Image (cartoon, rainbow, N blue to C red; front, top):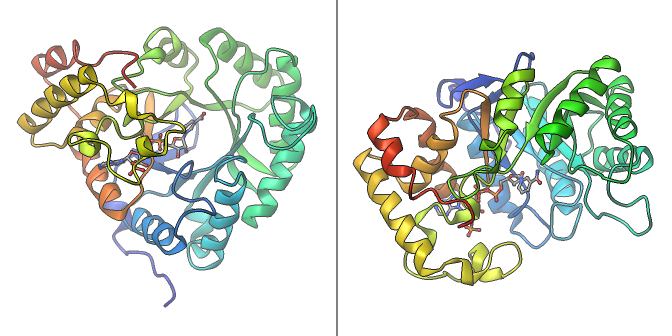
Length: 332
Ligand code: NDP
């Protein structure tokens, strides 16, 4: 059956403007880092993507290396576009990135103009696209002049291969430099993608302040601390969960201290009529500079539950005070 998107898709998930740009994102966006590779069930992927779009999630975040195998998330996403979502291309915000290890040799990672340019061409080919909406430098390269890395992002825009550019996991000082260089090149720095959750509060140490100062929006990744800020691990480590795979999340992270904090946070969530996942998402969205919380989901049920978070965003000062000692940096 051909996919027809829900008519009411823009009535469900709220949106936010990204900094002072024309880019607008759903408060919750979907990332394809996990669950969309060649090892993952194609029909489940399709069900998640279609449900997301039906619920107003029109931003899908990728990177050259997402899989496994690296590149396969983009290849699969291209197939999903061809099989249904693609007819809504003008409504979709699709991002990709280059920065991490992708192919052998000195130009298969980091921030050279050669790597970024070749990688974007490969990503476009895998997804079957003429352009992406956002192209990111995935990480700061200490050995390549920032002028060169930003020059490669600007070139992608000038060549019509990207509409907006972003940076991910850059320090506040490097963010300010990136912005200044891009301004000179006539291409605004539109968005920053840092990791942020109750268990990783790094952006509170200067990055959010810097982004506010330069009016650049943030989309925060792993807001559920890869599943730790949900009820996924309340009764142990389920088969098939991310922690069970021991690659990016490890069984030993489901520690006693973690469980104590997560269960206490869950009580606060319940008192607000939320799940822990919803609380964790609402908490990241309490910052005005955060345009979107970028989640992952391995099922439609997870996605649907998480999306309800965008509704209950405000916190009383008592709630924030109760959360503060439990939101411990480093637990994720
Ligand atoms: P999350 O913190 O949202 O973790 C997602 C995982 O948590 C899911 O795959 C699932 O794990 C579990 N989960 C989600 N919802 C629920 C729920 N309601 N109940 C129970 N478990 C749940 O984000 P990710 O770490 O996946 O990152 C999100 C996106 O951020 C990525 O896809 C990518 O686009 C981006 N990202 C960017 C990076 C960068 O360097 N710029 C780095 C990392 C991510 P399970 O598989 O166990 O079901």
